[in-house]
Length: 461
Image 1: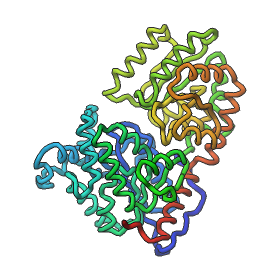
Image 2 (image 1 turned 180 degrees about the horizontal axis):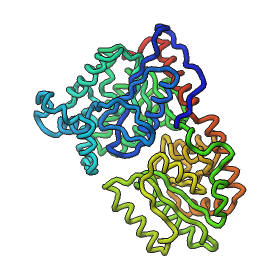
Image 3 (image 1 turned 60 degrees about the vertical axis):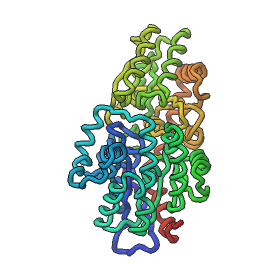
Image 4 (image 1 turned 120 degrees about the vertical axis):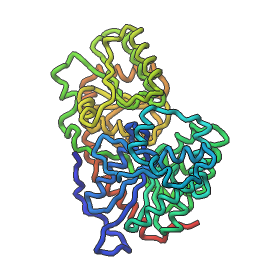
């Protein structure tokens, strides 16, 4: 379910009055994983369409996977198989396109990525640098295919990129189409930090080269604007800070918080984890904290419920965490419910009393936190990344020192033993999310960015 924004679309200077604003939005698939960026991009496309903007949501690398109706076109550009083979196999890029087009079919890519294939970090680094070089890299044919396709479509007024890592084609787009370019930065630094040297430094240099071609950058927090301004040498006045938003339509409505919905089972309190099961999301920290918490007196009523996507390459990690819980005698105190769809996610958030995802990295978004708050479920989060700004703006939770299981156990136990505070945090966070972080805010802020870039001449180095 999507709530329809009530605010009329912005008038955009310079556009004919008889046609809508046209936007091509390039998103990036996550190889079959539920991805916060994909979900947010998909929600944004639907929201912009609801106010009359003509949006094409175009997947790159792999098809997107979202727990809402998929709004993307049935094509994939920079198909993961083609760009990888062009990097890895000498002469592959010179093969006739008719022999390799089939590798970009969404069904073929979905099948290939279903095996959880992992790429060596050095190979991934070389591929990243090559993609950022655009028409001068090994994937020049894939870059040309996207640009040629866009030339056959109604001319976009804005091309919006979900991150700068897929932006190697921006100079050619500027040259051939003369479009304005908007880039959302949302985790680019985290990916860069996973690359070994010298590839990380080379990738950063290539991204810095692309910056002058971009008309406007969007980030979800001032923290991330400062972070990326320093990393990529972007002038701070080139950022629009647009706090993270979600479609709140099918979550619990204000006045119906999780703790009140669970009043029928007052003797039990449940900590929830809802994210991919991976070290960077901090599942091991939560497991450690839960074990410590359960060693304390009068905690028999506290349980742990774990949900989220589990990749093939993380099954050993997840099994280790489950075994730690069993060895601690907590086999009956935790439940792994697996991956959940949209309905399952909404139901999960209604069943828990607080959500905790203690990420080890400085998360620039935290979509799971907004979803929890929208359900009236308080959150306990590490005091880094975008989380301090989020809770300062919306309330609804507590911050704890990062990477500190003992402090995390204290915070969890204190909240779970204080129904009045749980209820107060749930109500205040829920009200603020529905008022300030719903579809209206998302559409309004994005429209404002588009209007701003179209009111001035396009960026050109």
